Length: 79
Image 1: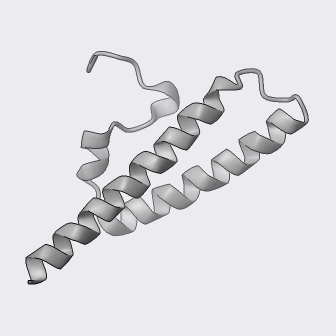
Image 2 (image 1 turned 60 degrees about the vertical axis):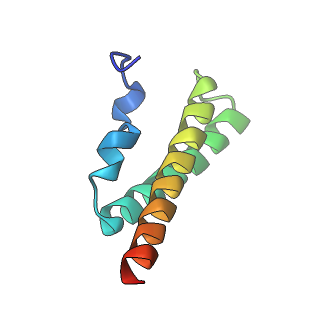
Image 3 (image 1 turned 180 degrees about the horizontal axis):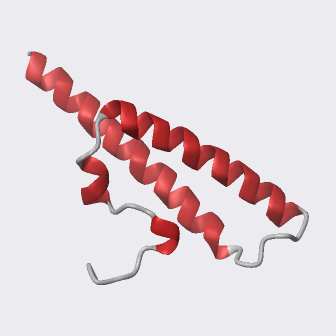
């Protein structure tokens, strides 16, 4: 399963966990913008692989989850 090729150079969760909060926030913003553009392409029938939307949504969710994990770690470390 780890040998699976990454679509469009998407990072795995392990790779994302090595990034800083600032880098993750930037990536999340980029992914959301990319998803927005892809949705417009689907609406105008310009996107050949509609399955890319699902991959993009999962990547946004993955980054959001890791950001929340890091926030929780900071809260627990400060206690």
